[in-house]
Image 1 (cartoon, chains in turn green, blue):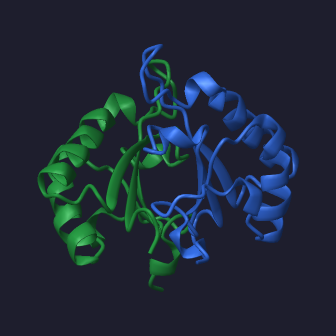
Image 2 (cartoon, chains in turn orange, green):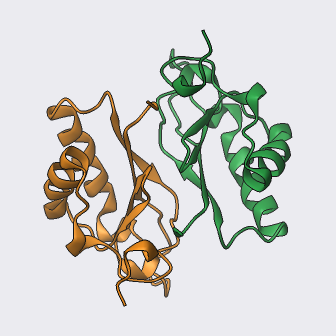
Length: 114
Length: 114
């Protein structure tokens, strides 16, 4: 067993206003990270689960980006309203949330169905 | 195959000066992260390897902390002089650098020999 069973990284990169790639911070990723942290603690999961801020995860085009290790599942366009579902399904039940996965062969490529 | 074969997270948490737990930023973790990033690019590894800043990884007592996924190997007291060895051994050859691993059962517990 490793230090964390699930380690959640939320991109909080901040670019200057008007940058063509945008950034996760301007799309409220700090609120997403705060809510992950708060709920993980409230649910008593914080011994084995951690939510961390991360620098640019290079998925800027996919909205607020969250990657969960060790399985490296990438989620895009995550909002505060998605946090509880990710926790209850992915973190607690170990079932990734299909509707939030980034659909891009560069990311969840094991998941691409042809 | 996932987006990144190796994903390196370097703690860049910053606490107020004099805080009893200290922090990684005051121990030059931003320089460690910059060097990882620079060398990964120079070596042409940046398609499959990424070095990211992370918020507090909760290993403050172990000096500048680096965790590498997907294997979740934890390194402590990392300095800029250690970066090349981590890249050449762990990232390129897939052999973790034993001398830099955090010796603490909370972290690399698979590695603890009794």
